[in-house]
Amino acid sequence: MEPSSTLSTAATPNGAGSSSPRRTDVAAVLRYLAALLALTIIYAGAARAGLMLDAIAGFATLVWAPTGIALAALLLFGYRLWPAVFLGAFAVNLWTGAPLVAALGIALGNTLEAVAGTFALRRIPGFRPALDRLEDVASLIVVAAGVCTMISASIGVVSLALAGTITPSQIAVTWRAWWLGDLVGALVVAPLLLVWVSARPPALVPRDIAEAAVLGVALLGLNLYIFGDVALGGVASLEQTYLVFPALICSALRFGQRGAVTAVFVTTVIAVWGTVAGHGPFARPVLNQGLFALQTFVAVATATFLVLGASVAERQRTEEWLRHAREIAEQANRAKSNFLAVMSHELRTPLNAISGYVELLAMELGGPVTPKQRDFLSRIQGSQGHLLSLIDEVLGFARLETGRLSLSLQPVIIYDMIVALEALVEVELQKKRLTFTRHVPETSLVARADPEKLRQILLNLVANGVKFTPEGGRISVGAKREHGSVRLWVTDTGIGIPSDQLKHVFDPYFQVDRGPSRKFPGMGLGLAISRDLARAMDGEIWLESTPGLGSTAWLVLPAA
Image (cartoon, rainbow, N blue to C red; front, side, top):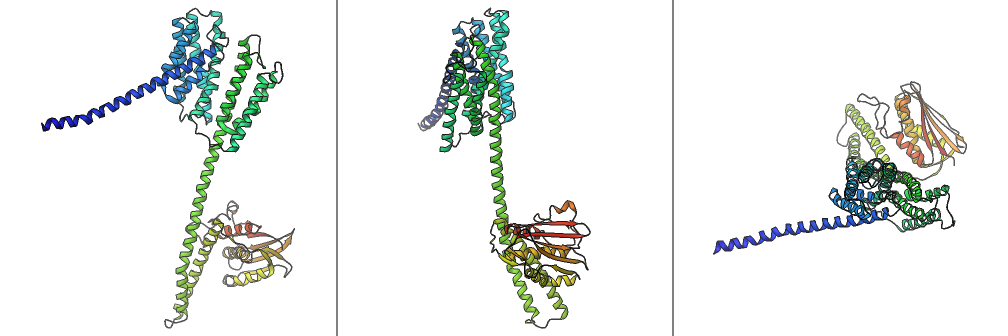
């Protein structure tokens, strides 16, 4: 009994599990059949409405929305819906009175048209049903609407001719009407369905809704005025058709491809209604003549505004990408600046400790110091001071980049500033036997600046002059008042800067003397910091140089 019980127990879950896929399959089949039925009804209804508009020979109409419906359905939901296109087309044409063979041929042509258009568009690399790229719009206009619609027109006309429904003399005019009707259906209806179903829903704010309402009212009013003769009481002129263009343009520019396809669809519906009713600039004694002129206008306008809508979408996508890239770059820049600030602070602590111990040794607190040892201590102090100055440069540049710069703008006497500056660089001047001259009025020249920041700028400029000027050269510092500002300059007789590098000297970390064998130390931040400090004080700085003769740095600040 136990084995039997075991088998019985094991069979229950297996049986339950096998019924679940069957239920799933049945549900999938029912959904598929429902989709086929829905598309068949929609296709047949749109086809019947089109054939009621003075169709040539009863079958070729200039208003044929089913082409756009079929193309959009297959693009969005797959080839498996093609039977609905065939059934809808076959039923309507049979109902209209087409012979059985002709109805089958027309249905075959309509189906192949939709399948071929879908196949061709899906072969386009990266095709997007949202039509937000120019290549997608161009493919839809040329391939799906322009070329693939010829399949239906050709097969349909041949079927009617073989069935004796049309005479040989009617073949050309029937084919033209058939093709143009299918083309306009593919251009007007397919984009409307594709864009609204596949595109990402827009995040509308009250202002967008208000603008859309205003545009909608304006579009309706203009279309009724032009194509419905609401305000004129008579037939409008062809020139007045251009009045609708501003509303179409605004719709595309403001709401992208959604706005473009919706505005074009609304315009087409009202224009067709008005023309059929005998109103508007395209009204003719013979309806087909009016519809032919109207659909030609609609085809050109639709293609134009589809391209405009795609251009707007591409521009918006590019702007979004640039915004995102800028945010990432700014975040990375802030992270780098914060890292530099933290590292500069952490490096300063041990360097200060080294300086303290060097001073203790120099004071002989640890025992007598020989002349040789004192020379070593002096070298250590010099290297430590140089490293501290580099850290100060990095820290200062990090502060500038992160916007943590505080200024105390006040009147600064330029003469006193330059005298103090000369004292700061006196030792370096003596080491290289450089001549320092100043050309500054003693008290009359006053600039509006932050004293510490101005001192830092001038010290950077003079230090560069000292660094790049050979022994026995000259350094000259001057200032004068000029048009409500103070112009300062630092001139040297150094090595100069090549013209191709001069435009980069204010770039962070740029060094004229580059490479592993460079002679002049530094990080390339001094001039970059000086430029940012000058601009922060409403000033400007630039450099002029002649290779082999020297350089002149100019600094302009507001006068106090």
